[in-house]
Length: 463
Image 1 (cartoon, rainbow, N blue to C red):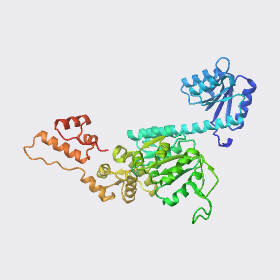
Image 2: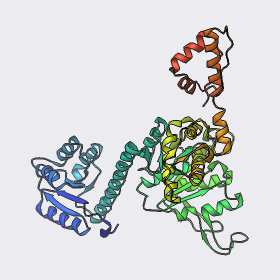
Image 3: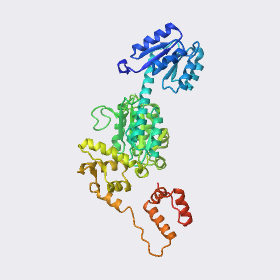
Image 4: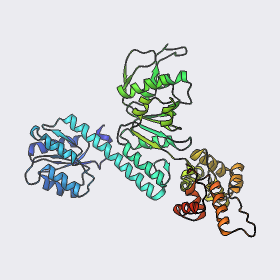
């Protein structure tokens, strides 16, 4: 990373009791484009942190008055975001390792190797840029119900955001699964965006969209003459994604023989192009996705056991839209904003009947289907609000028939009426008792009590 790419706000404080070492390190770090200051010990360093506000503190471990460990603990007690790099002599390495356990970023042995220090500072800068991005996304979630390109503030989505935050800073493989249209690639893009690889390539490939005979060439590349039609050497996705992220969508559609080769690359970090003899070394993070339960795909032989275990470091399950309907208004508003800008429109929202139709629909195509419906409606709408006439007919018809009528004859007992109402509501929700309780305006516990009292047959909860 060249010095001109540093932000002026990247400040480094050197804390060192030896005057010559302190002056030398301060000047060296300044030549790399950082803003620097120095302190003679931990006490002065703590004062300088308050006034100078460094992003990074490079501190000697052994100093008079307040040593590096005490300075580190004082900064952590203040809940300060500053990153700390410890400098240590050979005889105190155990103490430096203990400092890392106390949340120091890392340590270097003295005399300091300038190249290693430079690499370490660059890594700290990358980490802090990522943490700043996470803070922005958290604020975005609080204010708008979005997290990067993902939209939703439901409990299910908040759990996913937490896993994304945990997985992103690492180089670990991630397996994302969920029905088509739930937003699996958006998860992959957000993980890449929050990772230290964000400035490197993000390369997506859909394994189901490429013929099996060409998929291996697309992934690993080929040499000229490797097969009929290979008129020149071609780089594959792994080479294109070097130092970045490779997103393999519909991984379960990949042929078993190709899965074996993919596993080898994940383990060895090297491969050969088709028709090639030379090993190519790459540094690629793989995020894979499938629209079927990966455990089920594994049992059916569509996903090799060893590849599944290698990819399954972090697993993220995206729920279908019908299971997080409270996110629909947020999604609708986001899509309206997008298509208003694209089409020069100023649609404010949906009228009451259209909103009811949207929220009553089961959305088998998930978020992708909802997005397409809103795009079409935005184009068709003439006024400020989308009406049912701007929605697809099948969606409106289902919405209108979604509320069946309960017909009672004179003489029907209250208990029988309640029994029919509960049965009708359970049929309407396809035996989803949580949703049925919401419609009936009672708690889930109350619904179960009524089912037991009325001796209604229990059915498995719909998912």
